[in-house]
Amino acid sequence: MSEEGGLGVTVAEKFFGIIVLIVGILATYFTYLTAPALGSFAGFFGFLSVAVIVLGLLMITAKTE
Image (cartoon, rainbow, N blue to C red; front, side, top):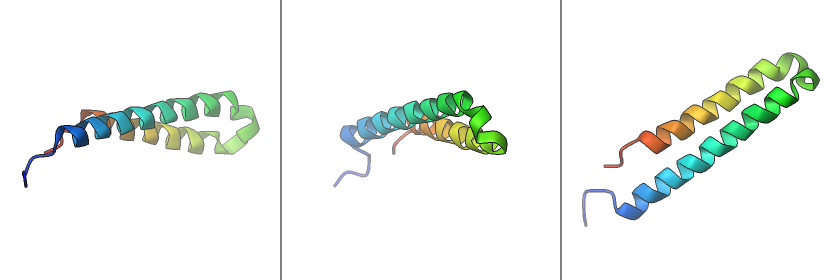
């Protein structure tokens, strides 16, 4: 068995990273739209949305070994 990650694993990781990035962007957008209704929790949900975006970017840029 090979020590290197296969092409399928790399493509799947990048694809899942793009999906996570899109979810993070949508979460940030809807948090921004509903900020008045969220009240004091808007900052918390904004932080969580940005964390999901960062996770998606890390998954896209990470090298699979």
